[in-house]
Image 1 (cartoon, rainbow, N blue to C red):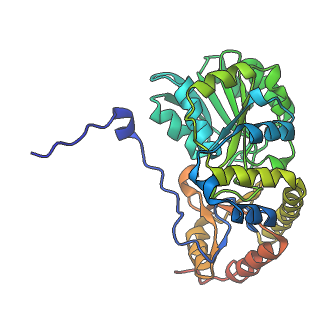
Image 2 (cartoon, helix red, strand yellow):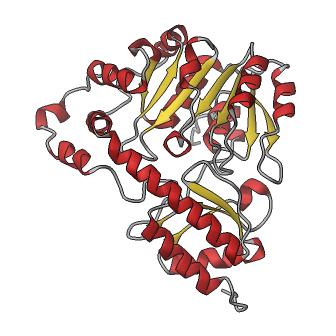
Length: 358
Protein backbone atom coordinates (compact mmCIF):
# COMPACT_ATOMS: atom_id res chain seq x y z
CA UNK A 1 0.00 0.00 0.00
CA UNK A 2 1.45 3.33 -1.04
CA UNK A 3 1.82 5.93 1.72
CA UNK A 4 0.50 9.40 0.87
CA UNK A 5 1.75 12.32 2.95
CA UNK A 6 -1.19 14.14 4.58
CA UNK A 7 -1.77 17.74 3.54
CA UNK A 8 -2.85 20.48 5.95
CA UNK A 9 -6.60 21.06 5.78
CA UNK A 10 -6.10 24.75 5.03
CA UNK A 11 -4.06 23.83 1.95
CA UNK A 12 -6.40 21.10 0.74
CA UNK A 13 -9.32 23.55 0.85
CA UNK A 14 -7.51 26.26 -1.12
CA UNK A 15 -8.13 26.88 -4.80
CA UNK A 16 -4.87 26.86 -6.79
CA UNK A 17 -3.71 30.14 -8.29
CA UNK A 18 -3.10 29.54 -11.99
CA UNK A 19 -1.87 32.70 -13.76
CA UNK A 20 -1.91 32.49 -17.59
CA UNK A 21 1.84 32.97 -17.93
CA UNK A 22 2.64 30.50 -20.70
CA UNK A 23 3.00 31.22 -24.40
CA UNK A 24 3.61 34.96 -24.04
CA UNK A 25 7.01 35.29 -25.72
CA UNK A 26 7.10 37.54 -28.76
CA UNK A 27 3.61 38.97 -28.15
CA UNK A 28 2.43 42.41 -27.06
CA UNK A 29 1.96 41.55 -23.40
CA UNK A 30 -0.76 43.82 -22.05
CA UNK A 31 -2.00 41.21 -19.58
CA UNK A 32 0.28 41.36 -16.50
CA UNK A 33 0.89 45.06 -15.80
CA UNK A 34 4.59 44.68 -16.54
CA UNK A 35 6.90 47.35 -17.92
CA UNK A 36 6.28 46.89 -21.66
CA UNK A 37 9.71 48.26 -22.66
CA UNK A 38 11.80 46.38 -20.13
CA UNK A 39 14.36 47.49 -17.58
CA UNK A 40 16.77 50.40 -18.06
CA UNK A 41 19.74 49.69 -20.38
CA UNK A 42 22.11 50.23 -17.43
CA UNK A 43 20.51 47.30 -15.63
CA UNK A 44 21.40 45.01 -18.52
CA UNK A 45 24.98 46.26 -18.45
CA UNK A 46 25.53 45.72 -14.73
CA UNK A 47 23.98 42.27 -14.89
CA UNK A 48 26.39 41.35 -17.70
CA UNK A 49 29.27 42.39 -15.45
CA UNK A 50 28.40 39.97 -12.64
CA UNK A 51 31.52 37.94 -11.87
CA UNK A 52 31.65 34.20 -11.29
CA UNK A 53 32.75 34.88 -7.73
CA UNK A 54 29.77 37.14 -7.10
CA UNK A 55 27.37 34.53 -8.44
CA UNK A 56 29.03 31.77 -6.38
CA UNK A 57 28.72 33.58 -3.04
CA UNK A 58 25.73 34.32 -0.84
CA UNK A 59 24.35 37.85 -1.29
CA UNK A 60 25.16 40.75 1.05
CA UNK A 61 22.33 43.18 1.73
CA UNK A 62 23.57 46.01 3.94
CA UNK A 63 24.96 48.31 1.23
CA UNK A 64 21.77 48.19 -0.83
CA UNK A 65 19.60 48.47 2.27
CA UNK A 66 21.30 51.77 3.10
CA UNK A 67 20.96 53.02 -0.49
CA UNK A 68 17.29 52.09 -0.67
CA UNK A 69 16.61 53.71 2.70
CA UNK A 70 18.07 56.94 1.31
CA UNK A 71 16.07 56.51 -1.91
CA UNK A 72 12.76 55.99 -0.05
CA UNK A 73 13.65 58.62 2.59
CA UNK A 74 13.39 56.21 5.49
CA UNK A 75 15.88 54.76 7.96
CA UNK A 76 17.60 51.45 7.24
CA UNK A 77 15.86 49.86 10.24
CA UNK A 78 12.48 50.73 8.69
CA UNK A 79 13.07 48.66 5.55
CA UNK A 80 13.18 44.97 4.63
CA UNK A 81 14.34 43.69 1.24
CA UNK A 82 12.04 41.00 -0.13
CA UNK A 83 11.79 38.80 -3.19
CA UNK A 84 8.97 40.85 -4.70
CA UNK A 85 5.64 41.71 -3.10
CA UNK A 86 4.69 38.04 -2.81
CA UNK A 87 7.60 37.47 -0.44
CA UNK A 88 6.50 40.47 1.65
CA UNK A 89 2.99 39.03 1.94
CA UNK A 90 4.39 35.62 2.85
CA UNK A 91 6.51 37.23 5.58
CA UNK A 92 3.56 39.20 6.98
CA UNK A 93 1.40 36.07 7.06
CA UNK A 94 4.11 34.04 8.81
CA UNK A 95 4.71 36.75 11.40
CA UNK A 96 1.23 38.08 12.16
CA UNK A 97 -1.55 35.73 11.03
CA UNK A 98 -2.50 32.83 13.29
CA UNK A 99 -5.00 30.05 12.45
CA UNK A 100 -8.51 31.37 12.98
CA UNK A 101 -7.58 35.04 13.02
CA UNK A 102 -9.50 37.38 10.71
CA UNK A 103 -8.13 39.06 7.58
CA UNK A 104 -10.06 41.87 5.90
CA UNK A 105 -10.00 42.38 2.11
CA UNK A 106 -11.86 44.49 -0.45
CA UNK A 107 -12.33 42.39 -3.56
CA UNK A 108 -11.66 42.05 -6.38
CA UNK A 109 -8.03 42.71 -5.56
CA UNK A 110 -4.57 41.13 -5.82
CA UNK A 111 -5.19 37.41 -5.39
CA UNK A 112 -2.09 36.83 -3.25
CA UNK A 113 -3.63 38.60 -0.24
CA UNK A 114 -6.26 35.89 0.06
CA UNK A 115 -3.76 33.20 -0.97
CA UNK A 116 -1.29 33.82 1.87
CA UNK A 117 -4.03 34.56 4.41
CA UNK A 118 -5.85 31.31 3.65
CA UNK A 119 -2.57 29.40 3.67
CA UNK A 120 -1.95 30.69 7.19
CA UNK A 121 -5.41 29.46 8.25
CA UNK A 122 -7.08 32.87 8.51
CA UNK A 123 -10.79 33.55 8.30
CA UNK A 124 -11.42 35.90 5.35
CA UNK A 125 -13.86 38.80 5.55
CA UNK A 126 -14.24 40.12 2.01
CA UNK A 127 -16.05 43.34 1.14
CA UNK A 128 -16.63 44.44 -2.46
CA UNK A 129 -15.93 47.45 -4.62
CA UNK A 130 -19.26 48.72 -5.99
CA UNK A 131 -20.39 48.73 -9.63
CA UNK A 132 -18.47 51.97 -10.21
CA UNK A 133 -15.35 50.42 -8.62
CA UNK A 134 -15.54 52.78 -5.64
CA UNK A 135 -14.06 51.98 -2.24
CA UNK A 136 -16.83 51.01 0.25
CA UNK A 137 -15.42 53.29 2.94
CA UNK A 138 -18.21 53.06 5.51
CA UNK A 139 -18.34 49.26 5.28
CA UNK A 140 -14.57 49.01 5.73
CA UNK A 141 -14.61 51.31 8.76
CA UNK A 142 -17.40 49.20 10.28
CA UNK A 143 -15.47 45.96 9.60
CA UNK A 144 -12.31 47.41 11.19
CA UNK A 145 -14.23 48.01 14.41
CA UNK A 146 -14.34 44.22 14.80
CA UNK A 147 -10.52 44.27 15.04
CA UNK A 148 -9.38 41.94 12.24
CA UNK A 149 -5.75 40.90 12.54
CA UNK A 150 -4.74 42.31 9.12
CA UNK A 151 -6.30 44.58 6.51
CA UNK A 152 -4.77 44.39 3.02
CA UNK A 153 -5.34 47.33 0.68
CA UNK A 154 -3.80 47.77 -2.77
CA UNK A 155 -3.56 51.48 -3.57
CA UNK A 156 -4.13 51.84 -6.49
CA UNK A 157 -6.11 48.62 -6.48
CA UNK A 158 -5.61 45.84 -8.99
CA UNK A 159 -7.72 45.17 -11.11
CA UNK A 160 -10.08 48.13 -10.56
CA UNK A 161 -7.54 50.97 -10.75
CA UNK A 162 -9.18 52.56 -7.69
CA UNK A 163 -7.08 55.03 -5.67
CA UNK A 164 -8.08 55.61 -2.05
CA UNK A 165 -7.73 59.30 -1.19
CA UNK A 166 -5.73 60.79 1.67
CA UNK A 167 -8.77 61.52 3.85
CA UNK A 168 -10.17 58.02 3.26
CA UNK A 169 -6.89 56.43 4.33
CA UNK A 170 -6.77 58.59 7.45
CA UNK A 171 -10.25 57.37 8.37
CA UNK A 172 -9.25 53.76 7.77
CA UNK A 173 -6.12 54.04 9.90
CA UNK A 174 -8.07 55.74 12.68
CA UNK A 175 -10.57 52.86 12.67
CA UNK A 176 -7.77 50.27 12.54
CA UNK A 177 -6.25 50.94 15.95
CA UNK A 178 -6.10 47.17 16.67
CA UNK A 179 -5.38 46.00 13.09
CA UNK A 180 -2.24 45.76 10.99
CA UNK A 181 -2.88 47.80 7.82
CA UNK A 182 -0.87 46.74 4.76
CA UNK A 183 -0.95 49.30 1.94
CA UNK A 184 0.45 47.80 -1.25
CA UNK A 185 1.83 50.59 -3.45
CA UNK A 186 2.95 48.43 -6.38
CA UNK A 187 1.70 51.10 -8.81
CA UNK A 188 2.98 54.13 -6.89
CA UNK A 189 5.04 55.47 -9.81
CA UNK A 190 1.89 55.88 -11.91
CA UNK A 191 -0.33 57.24 -9.13
CA UNK A 192 2.18 59.58 -7.49
CA UNK A 193 0.51 59.22 -4.08
CA UNK A 194 1.98 57.45 -1.06
CA UNK A 195 1.41 56.96 2.66
CA UNK A 196 5.05 56.01 3.23
CA UNK A 197 5.80 59.08 5.41
CA UNK A 198 3.05 57.90 7.79
CA UNK A 199 4.90 54.78 9.01
CA UNK A 200 6.51 56.55 11.98
CA UNK A 201 3.30 57.83 13.51
CA UNK A 202 1.30 54.70 12.59
CA UNK A 203 3.07 51.72 14.13
CA UNK A 204 0.44 49.37 12.65
CA UNK A 205 1.11 50.46 9.03
CA UNK A 206 3.14 48.56 6.45
CA UNK A 207 3.83 49.99 2.98
CA UNK A 208 4.92 47.68 0.16
CA UNK A 209 6.88 48.72 -2.92
CA UNK A 210 8.10 46.65 -5.86
CA UNK A 211 10.57 46.87 -8.73
CA UNK A 212 8.38 44.54 -10.82
CA UNK A 213 6.11 47.14 -12.42
CA UNK A 214 7.50 50.53 -13.46
CA UNK A 215 11.15 49.48 -13.07
CA UNK A 216 10.78 46.39 -15.27
CA UNK A 217 12.42 43.84 -12.94
CA UNK A 218 9.51 41.38 -12.60
CA UNK A 219 11.71 38.47 -13.72
CA UNK A 220 14.24 39.11 -10.95
CA UNK A 221 11.79 39.47 -8.03
CA UNK A 222 12.74 42.29 -5.69
CA UNK A 223 10.69 44.62 -3.53
CA UNK A 224 10.65 46.39 -0.18
CA UNK A 225 8.57 46.24 2.96
CA UNK A 226 8.61 49.54 4.89
CA UNK A 227 7.27 50.03 8.41
CA UNK A 228 8.01 51.35 11.90
CA UNK A 229 11.34 50.03 13.17
CA UNK A 230 9.70 47.97 15.95
CA UNK A 231 7.49 46.18 13.44
CA UNK A 232 10.42 45.66 11.05
CA UNK A 233 12.46 44.10 13.86
CA UNK A 234 9.68 41.57 14.54
CA UNK A 235 9.26 40.73 10.85
CA UNK A 236 13.00 40.17 10.36
CA UNK A 237 12.89 37.36 12.92
CA UNK A 238 10.67 35.36 10.53
CA UNK A 239 12.56 36.20 7.32
CA UNK A 240 14.74 33.76 5.44
CA UNK A 241 18.34 35.09 5.51
CA UNK A 242 18.93 34.94 1.73
CA UNK A 243 15.54 35.47 0.12
CA UNK A 244 16.73 38.05 -2.46
CA UNK A 245 19.26 36.92 -5.06
CA UNK A 246 22.43 38.74 -6.12
CA UNK A 247 21.24 39.58 -9.63
CA UNK A 248 18.13 41.26 -8.19
CA UNK A 249 20.26 43.30 -5.77
CA UNK A 250 22.53 44.52 -8.57
CA UNK A 251 19.56 45.39 -10.80
CA UNK A 252 17.76 47.33 -8.06
CA UNK A 253 20.90 49.30 -7.24
CA UNK A 254 21.33 50.28 -10.89
CA UNK A 255 17.64 51.24 -11.14
CA UNK A 256 17.72 53.70 -8.25
CA UNK A 257 20.90 55.29 -9.65
CA UNK A 258 18.92 56.37 -12.72
CA UNK A 259 15.42 57.27 -11.45
CA UNK A 260 14.81 59.37 -14.58
CA UNK A 261 14.27 56.17 -16.61
CA UNK A 262 11.34 55.07 -14.46
CA UNK A 263 9.91 58.60 -14.28
CA UNK A 264 9.97 58.97 -18.08
CA UNK A 265 8.34 55.59 -18.58
CA UNK A 266 5.62 56.36 -16.01
CA UNK A 267 4.86 59.70 -17.67
CA UNK A 268 4.49 58.05 -21.07
CA UNK A 269 2.25 55.33 -19.65
CA UNK A 270 0.02 57.89 -17.95
CA UNK A 271 -0.37 59.78 -21.23
CA UNK A 272 -1.12 56.52 -23.04
CA UNK A 273 -3.65 55.58 -20.36
CA UNK A 274 -5.67 58.71 -21.00
CA UNK A 275 -5.44 58.19 -24.75
CA UNK A 276 -6.70 54.61 -24.28
CA UNK A 277 -9.62 55.67 -22.06
CA UNK A 278 -10.72 58.35 -24.55
CA UNK A 279 -10.49 55.88 -27.44
CA UNK A 280 -12.50 53.23 -25.56
CA UNK A 281 -15.15 55.83 -24.80
CA UNK A 282 -15.26 56.80 -28.48
CA UNK A 283 -15.78 53.14 -29.42
CA UNK A 284 -18.58 52.82 -26.89
CA UNK A 285 -16.62 50.48 -24.61
CA UNK A 286 -17.21 51.39 -20.93
CA UNK A 287 -14.10 51.73 -18.80
CA UNK A 288 -13.27 52.94 -15.31
CA UNK A 289 -10.95 55.67 -13.99
CA UNK A 290 -7.51 54.31 -13.12
CA UNK A 291 -4.46 55.62 -11.26
CA UNK A 292 -2.28 52.68 -12.32
CA UNK A 293 -0.67 51.34 -15.51
CA UNK A 294 -3.83 49.55 -16.59
CA UNK A 295 -7.46 50.21 -17.41
CA UNK A 296 -10.43 48.01 -16.56
CA UNK A 297 -12.85 47.89 -19.51
CA UNK A 298 -16.21 46.22 -20.04
CA UNK A 299 -16.46 44.46 -23.40
CA UNK A 300 -19.75 42.83 -22.48
CA UNK A 301 -20.78 39.58 -24.15
CA UNK A 302 -18.23 40.18 -26.92
CA UNK A 303 -15.34 40.01 -24.46
CA UNK A 304 -14.19 36.38 -24.79
CA UNK A 305 -14.33 36.49 -28.60
CA UNK A 306 -12.43 39.77 -28.81
CA UNK A 307 -9.75 38.44 -26.48
CA UNK A 308 -9.31 35.38 -28.69
CA UNK A 309 -9.16 37.51 -31.84
CA UNK A 310 -6.58 39.83 -30.30
CA UNK A 311 -4.47 36.89 -29.15
CA UNK A 312 -4.36 35.61 -32.73
CA UNK A 313 -2.91 39.02 -33.64
CA UNK A 314 -0.26 38.68 -30.92
CA UNK A 315 -1.94 41.03 -28.41
CA UNK A 316 -2.64 39.73 -24.89
CA UNK A 317 -5.18 41.25 -22.50
CA UNK A 318 -6.32 39.84 -19.13
CA UNK A 319 -9.81 38.38 -18.78
CA UNK A 320 -11.12 39.27 -15.30
CA UNK A 321 -14.65 37.87 -15.55
CA UNK A 322 -13.98 35.42 -12.72
CA UNK A 323 -13.31 38.33 -10.34
CA UNK A 324 -16.61 40.01 -11.06
CA UNK A 325 -18.89 37.06 -11.79
CA UNK A 326 -19.87 38.24 -15.26
CA UNK A 327 -18.50 38.09 -18.77
CA UNK A 328 -16.71 40.96 -20.44
CA UNK A 329 -14.55 42.69 -17.84
CA UNK A 330 -11.02 42.93 -19.20
CA UNK A 331 -7.90 44.49 -17.69
CA UNK A 332 -5.68 46.22 -20.24
CA UNK A 333 -2.08 46.98 -19.32
CA UNK A 334 -1.04 50.37 -20.68
CA UNK A 335 2.25 50.52 -22.55
CA UNK A 336 3.89 53.14 -24.71
CA UNK A 337 2.05 55.39 -27.15
CA UNK A 338 3.08 53.13 -30.04
CA UNK A 339 1.93 49.96 -28.26
CA UNK A 340 -1.39 51.54 -27.33
CA UNK A 341 -1.92 52.63 -30.92
CA UNK A 342 -1.35 49.05 -32.07
CA UNK A 343 -3.99 47.79 -29.64
CA UNK A 344 -6.46 50.48 -30.66
CA UNK A 345 -5.98 49.80 -34.36
CA UNK A 346 -6.80 46.13 -33.75
CA UNK A 347 -9.79 46.98 -31.55
CA UNK A 348 -11.22 49.43 -34.09
CA UNK A 349 -11.27 46.64 -36.66
CA UNK A 350 -12.94 44.17 -34.29
CA UNK A 351 -15.41 46.22 -32.31
CA UNK A 352 -17.78 47.49 -35.03
CA UNK A 353 -17.95 44.04 -36.65
CA UNK A 354 -21.24 42.18 -36.30
CA UNK A 355 -19.53 38.89 -37.09
CA UNK A 356 -17.75 38.11 -33.83
CA UNK A 357 -18.26 34.37 -33.82
CA UNK A 358 -14.97 32.56 -33.14
